[in-house]
Length: 167
Length: 167
Length: 167
Image (cartoon, rainbow over all chains, first blue to last red; front, side, top):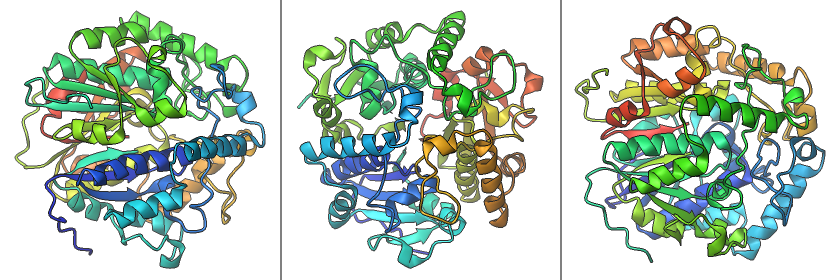
């Protein structure tokens, strides 16, 4: 089992990423990047659908989904994309590329680059063993910067004394 | 940057509202209201889709979405609204007005009124700067009771020593 | 009001289950089971859609929903189930039975059995009063192992000093 000794900081944050869409991967990195900038020990644990965010061949293709999200508006309006419209072929890709542009305009890096930035700043990235086994993954399927594949029990040891955010 | 000094309490709760639908805005206020009733310092941070809950012109029109939620049942039955049915035009509005009625019957105030009640009891409300910039908002677009627009780094300082609930 | 005295452990985890689909009920039990295995006091609070996971006549029929989840792939591929395809009648049942098989292959017990295992190991299960009233439930509608129906204020007392995970 990996060594979960603290990096010396007094405050520790564990973010569990359980969803693999662009907005939640970004939310995790925005919060994580802020945490590490404040000198907080950061551990990010990827599980369930969140695994997509660290599967090498998938992590550059994260999508945002407009279906079932009444908060997603038709651009420039307060009108929600109706579920029927949002479900049309092409709308997921459209919404994803729109969000990409908006983030770029605000200097939010693309997912892989953002993750690398946070990794370089000292964050730790962990993959959930159960999901890893369920998807039949191999080490080479994962992004290079992933520290290790760990169990939920390992995560409990890791998160001792930490604040936990489940995204 | 705003002053995040404690209000004197020993326990602090930070709720991150990342979704803008009626059920999650309500969940945040039910938990927040309970917290403040127990004398806990309460800070609510609105980010991503959750911004809808504090955009003045949107906050009275939050919707609940029946699509992609197999837990939402056809009223009075154990039969889930099938995805096809739930996606039909009008179903989101129908589900929303149904939930409105159910909450009213249990004396859960409408969203704006509930937020006001919790604000009057001493809660703090914060808007996420990144989302604010992404949506091109101005101060006058936000609900009056919002304390300020703060960055994710500010949130990290604010949540030092707090319990964090990410909704 | 129930007695929330600690069981003697130094660390306490409160999991709020707010969604009633198979993947989130499972996520709660995977984390909860790991916590209790590490000697952590575990309290699970079921609220909003999460109530389905402890309603006796519903808990054996939890579904996973493929709609609005771009991370759900067509089996054996990296191709997301398009929203149109995922919304077709039968796809929710198909995705659910698929996930059932995958979990069985990894010795993850079915939901009720998993909950029983965690209950037998000493976990506490609580139902949210507001949701209970909203759904017009009676005690006999709930799973036998539910400790009690408690308010959000009770939950705040219960979670004093705990780590909180909102699923």
